[in-house]
Image (cartoon, rainbow over all chains, first blue to last red; front, side, top):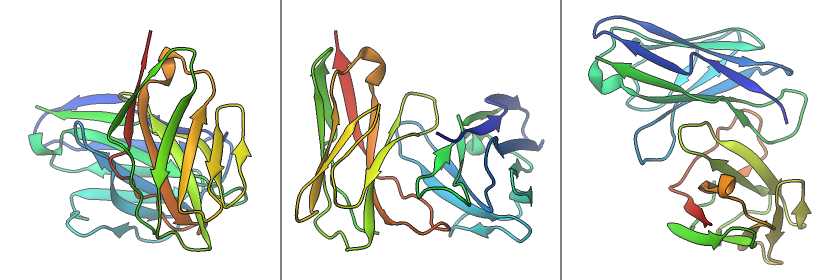
Length: 116
Length: 111
């Protein structure tokens, strides 16, 4: 299947700093990518939909100024957690679907963010 | 998207077939059934999907009932590495639509 690469896989940052997470579709183009967050022992929750060349669409309750999303190319979307706080510690996962391919989506390996 | 119901957890002996059920009684005619799994601390992995015919690939088989109100994912020879949370998701094949994850079934493959 298609490959979605997420980087970094694990990051620890201090409160108040910003962290950028990258999501790349390695062998296909994706005009839309999705960002999810997952807390321990919980299921994935959609945070936002990233659209290439336009503004992201955020789910209710997700602060767009805190979770900045940029989708500058057909293979790259980034999520920046700004002014991170300990409660932002979570597992962040991106997904993408091949614009020219099938109906299934492929997921990155996830990024474990710990804010200290 | 139609709601799905899955058992919270299941056990399976290594080497035996694992049969994971999913109820989706409100499924619409244009909605597909997708299965993903998530191994601890990893992103979800696509397994298989189907509309109404049974499907098989190198990972698993998907059996969809004739009325499409339920389905079963079959892992023919479960290994310890198949221990994961398995998600059954029903959705239309719309490119711009995300996947909505429920709690899934936690499958434990026992030696």
